[in-house]
Amino acid sequence: MKATYFFKKWKTYFQKLDKAVLDLLYPPRCPICDEVAAEGECICSSCRKTIHRVKEPMCKKCGKPIENVREEYCSDCMKKRHDFTQGKALWVYDKFVRESIYRFKYQNRRDYARVYAGELAEAYGGWIRARKIQAIVPIPLHKDRKKLRGFNQAEVLAVELGKILGIPVKRNLLIRTRNTRPQKELNGIERKNNLKKALKISENVVQLKYILIVDDIYTTGSTMDAASSLLKEAGVIEVYFCCIGIGKGF
Image (cartoon, rainbow, N blue to C red; front, side, top):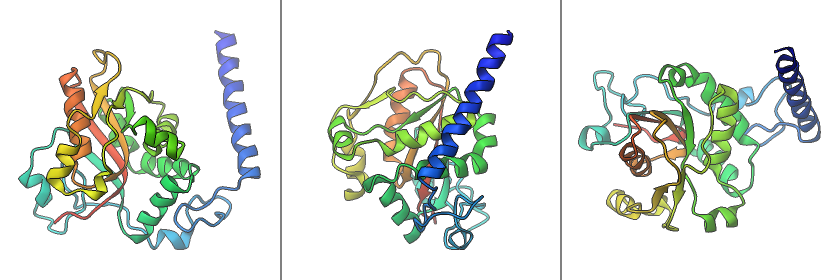
């Protein structure tokens, strides 16, 4: 018992030491302006004024911010049945958030993931724990695209969020079997067809009943639906999601 206690204490100590050394060698940068953040800040105080955290009223299904306080769902969720249970997003996907996520994905700014995850945990940590999430699952990239980019941004984000919340991350539970066209290039119907038979589950999920999917951006929900449908077919009861950016609902 004592050995386990001291092991955990030393593990925590070295984790903090590693972080301190990394922060010294590579000072944390604000993911919005990409400048070195002031001490004690992860996002510049001036940058916080340029981004908009998603707040109520929001769609009770996908989490998009909506203007009409009398509506429970955005226009998209009123028209379409989704396979996921519910989702939450951090920021409105405007110019500043779009540029931040672009650098994160295409300019190898993996360090942003720690900030994104911290912000998500602060905003929705309680919500995630209340849903009894057993595992966090990133939306996968096809192996060819991952090799070209060097990493899967959703996986990096999921790992950081899992560390903060103490929830296991199943990095390879979902696998993309086809190198599909980027969803941003397609319309709603094309997005849905683009993902048909593009994903598969790599292991038995019989013990997992409550899963949180993580991705960078939510648009029409086609990707979340494809992943959620597959997981539910395998026996998962409830599938939730979290993402960094999301468009406005109407």
